[in-house]
Image 1 (cartoon, rainbow, N blue to C red):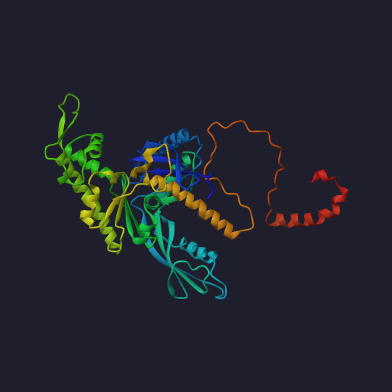
Image 2: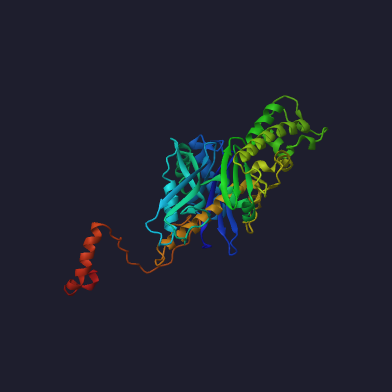
Length: 456
């Protein structure tokens, strides 16, 4: 990994749009150079509903991140979520020409690329293909078939699809903001990279990312993702319940939830009351914290039960030794860990994106609220590693120059030093052009005595 690479993650969420600029330090830890935030008014339940408002929020977040980091941002890694996300299992196979030759990385890549050609329901397309295990000449349970001998190579794949219109709207928003998308990543996958350890993924764990508009679920077992789902409920629906149950304004309901909310009503005091300023010429409103906790508990219990039902439906409910990891802004609700353990009977902890972070001046990024954005930056680095590895495997003898992840230059660049002029490199011909250039190069030696060398 080259430490001079700078990666930007852009989380287009329901409540906020956040941009993080990160760089790996000499210890391989992620150093956050800058962060930008903006209120998200054009996204509903993880889906872009207003292009112009979303573009304005993206520009604001990017501008803040640029000012704080001193980096001009051109390329970003973007997350995608929403109820339209679907996952399915599929089996594919290829037949090789000879069993004498070993199975190569190209064979595995060909099998994986075939999965992207699957026929999906109208209006959807494949965004991720993740291998589960392989089978070589009917020998099952193979995790890495490279180097084995066999004619028939089969694989089980976990495929994730998304709605085409949702993808197009995200692309349109990012493009209108003057940016380019390097990778489009499923948000629960990004969150898992920042808060889950390899040991938890090996033992079996369910990641629950409670955002503003959606609750994302990702199940891992034996180090491999086994299931992913997005439920259309999040912290905003709790705020809406408080608004209706306590007859207060939306912003007042959000503050009540954040400052005084508890997920278990028994933990709230019967005698504590919060006074809310009334509307114009009206008396203040008094809110019982006990009643507030009852409203929150009822909705959070429903959300957790829906997630637990999804876990049980996959058949992994009794196989997750590492239990449940809660992350996202909604996970910061008081007593939510105890409520989750009570409903599911599984060990639960809060996931903080601290393991992969180095020293940083921005302490706020260590909150579970930014787990997805940190994961988007980490997934950008993983994509660079895979790109480097794949290119060197295909052409190991050539020196490769890769497209920069972002334009990492100072906001006010110094005057360039005088450099000797470099001769322009001719464009490498192909097709018919290459044929005629070969003829010229072979006959050039015959004509060289008749021309001045400076003409060449």
